[in-house]
Length: 90
Image 1 (tube, rainbow, N blue to C red):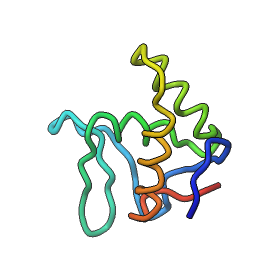
Image 2: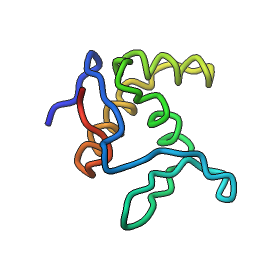
Image 3: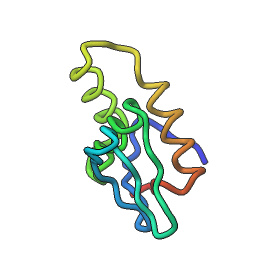
């Protein structure tokens, strides 16, 4: 599946994204377990709300971390998340 900057994604229905204070990390909960996300993945996932394009998600990450050039990283992560079944296109 091709992932593009103008597309909108959200967390797949089987999963629930939440902040886990005990692990100091964002996690994806699902019936059989949990996936602990690294900081970058958590920052992207929390922005996949079903209303923002991946370009908007990228802009938010770049603004929050005072950097540029993250689009390829965001697209690559989302492509992998789609393959894992963590997110779905709206």
